[in-house]
Image 1 (spheres, rainbow over the protein chains, first blue to last red):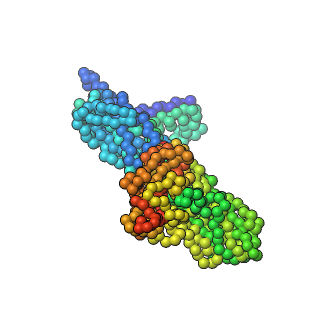
Image 2: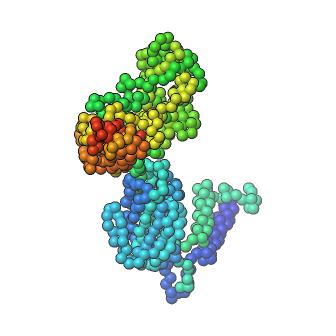
Image 3: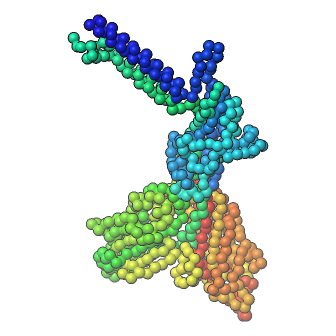
Amino acid sequence: MRRDLFHARKLLLSIAVLGAAASIAGLGTFATFTSSTSASNTIASGTLSLTAPFSRLGSGASPIAPGDTMQRAIDLSYSGSISFASATLTTSATTSSLLDTDATNGLQIAIDRCSVAWTESGPPYTYTCGGSTSTVLASRALVGSNIALANLTLTAGATDHLRVTLTFPSGAGNTLQNQSSTVSYTFTGNQRAGTDQ
Amino acid sequence: MLPRRWLRSSDVLPKGSRVAALAGAAFAAFFVVSLAAAGFNSTGTGGPMSVTTKRIFSGARSTAPGDLRDVSSGVTSNKSDPLDYDDSIPTQTGNWASAFSASRFFQIDYNSPRPAGVPTSNVNFNIKYASKGGGGSGNACIYKIEVRRASTDSLLGTLDHSASPLCSTGTTYRVVNEDISAWITSTDIANDLRIKIFGYETGARGWNIEYATVTGTSYANWTLFDTTSTDQSTGTATTSDWALASAEGTGAAGTVYTDATNWPSASPSTSKYLQFTFDHPDVPSGAVVQSVTLKNIWRDSAAPGNGGTVCNYFDVYNGATLVETHGGNTQATALSCNSSATTWQIDNVTLSNVDTVAEANSMTIRVYYWGAPTCGGGQNPSCVKSVTDQLQATFTYYLD
């Protein structure tokens, strides 16, 4: 009996070692980063960090009427050591109403980038750009997942100055009276493609 | 003892170790798959942002006054819509049958002053009625009440009292307040409402209807007044419009209001006028009144002739307080003049000083008419009356 137990433990240990080896092999096969075993080189992975050091997106608006617009600025900072390849926006309503479920007459979102920091006035907040502007997101329904963003810098160490504009369509009818929504914004930056290092 | 190839893990490892081994294997598999599918990413967040819309969007809501006082003679005469007020001026129906008949009813279409798209509550149909009396008269009885859409005549619901009709005691008025909230759930329906009363008079006589209104609540208590009633108590329909409610432009009797007495000559008299009270705009408390306009469509009852005309100006009151005046008391400064008995003069005036909820909800208009430059006697133009096709106020407001 003791001998059988000894053999069984050896067998399980062998399986565990093989599993670990397979895991490492899998990483080497599929992961973005690779490493070298050269004795003279130090290989360290970079950092990827997207933060929003400045944001007015927490400033709500009430009560709004059809035709109203709400401008809010947010800075996206790429503070890591690795640049991003792309960025997306996911918006979700924690308190939902026709404002976020009516894709046509509910709130619409558009995002512009200014090459320098937006000049803010208000509240109510409005913004002017002292540099050049570009469209990051053309007007569309407010709520969506992984919405592709364009014309962002995405370079490590850089900051994109964005202006989010919500529009309540002038064609919104009386069914949208007395509606209330709370919306959260998540900007996601995705790492650049792997390159030779 | 089992052969080695049949050895089970339970034979060699305690239960806790087995669970740990399985969890470790699952984690390893998940780790490999996850890293195989994704590179690095990072997220930044903003918000949450709360957005709320106004309770009532800005819009124009129009209504005609129900209360009309004719003071053209210098003495006040109540010419209000008889279906609107408990003022001892009842609407009189024709003679009903002595028992229910599906072809005999009294039908009322209501005005549309409410802001659209707002939920309603506590909606009631209110009627005060009795037998008109007379020889052989009995009791006025309501057999059933139908609630309908005015625009389509589609039936919303029925208050069926066939098992126990609601009867007055002779000529003593009975007040009935029927809850119709189940069918009137929004102002969209309230603004398109028809009530159809099926009844009879046990002595086959007529009814007096002291008032028949609809009341409800949507941010404010409100009252709807009739615009058109159809008396089919006899089995044959007779339609009556509230004279001021709409602009028919025909001048037909019943669709216009002709004042009682010829207007004075040469200059207006501050004691001779038509007074209109807008007592049910029912603008909710807290609303922002953006504008109020008054439309008066009128003409002469007959052409004065000989170069004569009829002119007017009007005062706006909030209760007894003068708010503003439009036009002066000479032909040159009058708000408008009209020498025709066929061409309608349309006066559209912005009441810029009516800018609060209190002023909007208690607005009284006094219109002073006179014959200009003079009238009456010799070769002078004739002194005439005025004919009002429509008097309507439009209130533009919103509620945050």
